[in-house]
Amino acid sequence: MPPNRHEDNPRNVGFLVDPSPRAPHNTASMLTAVAAAPKVKREIARACHAGLDVQTLGVEVVTHLREVVPFGAWCWPTADPSTSLITGAVSVGLSGAAAEGLLRLEYLSADFNKFTDLARRKPPTGVLSEATDGELERSARYREVYASAGLADDLRMALVIDGACWGYLALHRERSAACFAPAEEAFVGDLCEHLAEGVRTGLLISALEHSELPAGPGLLMLAEDDSVLSMNDTAQQWLQEVADVDKPAADGLPFAAYAVAAQLRGLEHAEAPANSASPRARLRLRSGQWCVFHGSRLVGPQSSGDVAILIERVQSPTLPRTILVSYGLTERESQLTQLVLRGLSTAEIAAQLCIAKTTVQDHLKSVFTKVGVRSRREVAARVFAQHYLPHAELGATLGPDGWFAG
Image: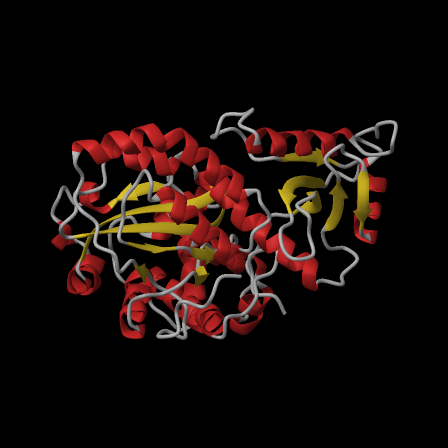
C-alpha cells in the first residue's frame, strides 16, 4: 500500500495535483509518446492483472500513462456498479472545499461529460474541450473549480466491463498545456476493460483477505508449471460445481483455469496484444447461474508472485438494501431508482422495464415523495450524500460487489 497522500482532505475524494511543471506538447515529445505507446499499453494491462489493491493500481496506471498522455492532475474514483455513484477516490490534492464542490457539481448540476453519462456511452470517454467546442467556460466544474486551481481541459472515462461501471478515471491539464487530442482519448479508451477488471479484481482480492463467508470467492494458487500449490475451501466447492460443465483435466482442474492462466502469462510476456481480452472465463452452471474465473498475480511480502485463479458467482448489481429500506421503496420503485441513478431517461427506463412512460412518471412521483426531493438530479444528490459520502469519508472498505463492506 502506498503512503497516504491526502492528509489535507479526510474525504479522500478529489485530485492529486502533480507539483512538477509540464510543458505543452511539441513534436519531439509527441514522437516519443507514439513510440512508447505499445509498451505503455502492455505495462498497464499487466498492472491491471497483477493483483494490486485499487489505490496502488491507480498510482501504477497513471505513472505509465504519463509516458504517452501528459497531464498535471488526476482522479481515480471507485463506483458502486449498481448505481454508478462514486464510493471513494485515490489521493486528493485539492482542498476539502474544492473536493466538496466537485461532488456537488457532479450530482446536482448539469455539466458536460458527467461520470454517469459516460458510463452509458460507447466508448465511455469524453474530453471537455471537445464537448464545449473549445469554450471551457460553459462547463460548471471549469468555472467553479478548475479555473481557480489552474486547470483547464479534462479527459474522463468510465471504467465499464460487462455493462457494469466499477469506477472512473479523470485526467487534467493546466491552462498552459494543449487540449487533449482525439488520439490520446482513443489511447485511454483502449484501456477501459483492463482498468475496470483491475478495480474489480482488486476488490475481489481484498474480500478474500477479510471474508469468512462460505459462499464467497474461491482462491486457487498455481505454480508456473500449472501445478496446484494451494486452494481455500470455497475454491474446492466451486471446482465441484464446475466439474459438471467443464470436465477437469487429468489432474482434476477444469480447462477454464488453465485458459485463464495462459491468458495472464500471455499478457505478461508480450505474447498477446496489449488490448486483448482480460484473463478470465465465464461458465454457465447446470443451475442456470454463471461463475467467472479471474486470472491475477498476488503480490506482497507473503507471496512469491504465483498465479492466482479467483472464482466467484456472477450476479447482477442491485440497489443496496440499506437504500431500499431507508426510503421504503417498493421493488419496482427500487428498480426504477437504480436506473435513475445511472442517468437513464424516462424513455430508456420505460424500455428497460417494459412499462409505459406515464407509468414511469407515476413511479417517479412516488420515489420523489419518499426520498423527499423534487427532481431526478436531487434524487442522485440525496442518495449520494446520505448513503455514499459518509462511508467514503470514513474510508470504508469496499466489498467485491462494489458496495461498502460491513
